[in-house]
Length: 191
Image 1 (cartoon, rainbow, N blue to C red):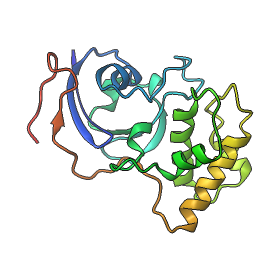
Image 2 (image 1 turned 45 degrees about the horizontal axis):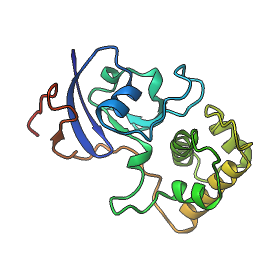
Image 3 (image 1 turned 90 degrees about the vertical axis):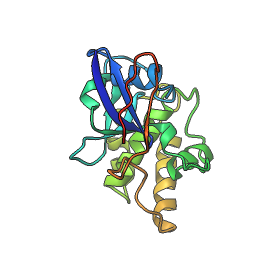
Image 4 (image 1 turned 180 degrees about the horizontal axis):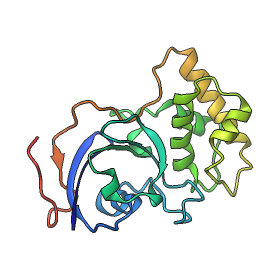
């Protein structure tokens, strides 16, 4: 077993996990973050995309099926569940996906939303071509991408027009108290 100590959606978790456990499995099976979807299991579809910030770096979109949980140790992860505000208010990208009907089956939607958040942090005023390029690592088999592109454009307009801050992403602020996800195998560390 290996120890992981990381912040996920604003809560610190300290757990003992198998060294070969994928980050997506840790998020889903240990923490219950089932919005992070397991799609292709090969890093091709992007359904498992989350934002990850290493202890000394800024957040970026990563495919959590291509990263071990132990590789995330000391970092911060934001899942699609962590994008909404504490009061349940949707992130502007989530709201835009809802309002623009940017989904059909919904399987790719969590990864698309997280990838769009990352894209808009890098390019607050993306062109249609930049949106398509920025989401090219996320596959959708249902929509044809038209409403997804419209949703990202709408989110960019809403975020820029209202003077909103950059999209939510992991920060290096003081995290909450440690939480255990699996009491039988978790060791809590005092904050």
